[in-house]
Image (cartoon, rainbow, N blue to C red; front, top):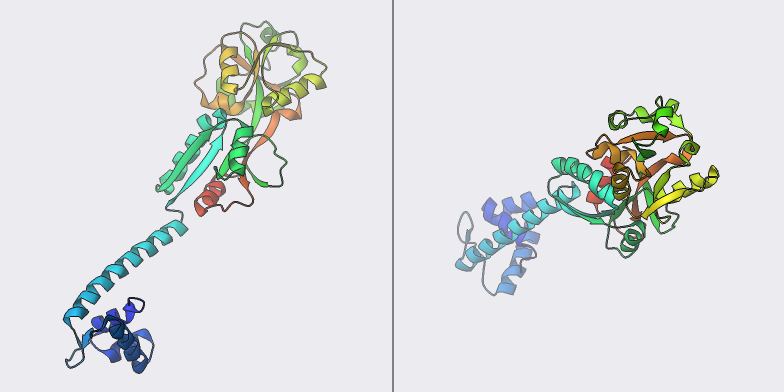
Length: 311
């Protein structure tokens, strides 16, 4: 009985059937017939047609009260949908390793929320394998990762890039022979490490202990590839899961680690390490947003990718 409530409300607002018909761009007989069907469903008249302007009956007043309430709810919902379509509401479930969850996503989300404050974010921190499983199951909308994933079920968008550097304890004597190549944390923050003029060979460090990540980690995999490429049998002090841990152990002087320039730029760094750029192309890699191809990606997620891609 409220399907055509807009007809009743327009008559109520315009004060006559003729004016309402013009407002609605329908004929007056058609409007009258539609209102008559509503009144027949109710069982009593809505309008007193003997008055000028037309007036509401007692039942008509109640009908209009409920119709106005429904109209308000519909308008609220339409505004909500409008906000949603304009990325003002919604949620994003995104996963990443501890490196990205700690040092990249907070800044991205903070910047995004300044423009779209009603977008809610859930961050899941785990290893690549587990994050991919969650993405496949639809438990995550996106993951951010530096591993090149060859999977037809996922779609990648380049988010950013990073450079893998060597973190070398200052106590190691090799630093004296490489004075012209060693870099400080401030140098990394200022982008000096991007200059190939500072590149050195991994062989320079072959006699020192290393702190490596397991080969399931892309950084660990690349490190092992570099050792093989340069015919180095590394002295491995520790195999670990997280870059942050390997970096912290290097800071104590126990060995050399492979770490991202992102970590060095974002962490509070002390004065116990020097950093070196290697000559190999393997030290450069992209960081990707991954989504499941078959999964519906909300407009909030799409906007988040659009804003943060290619940085």
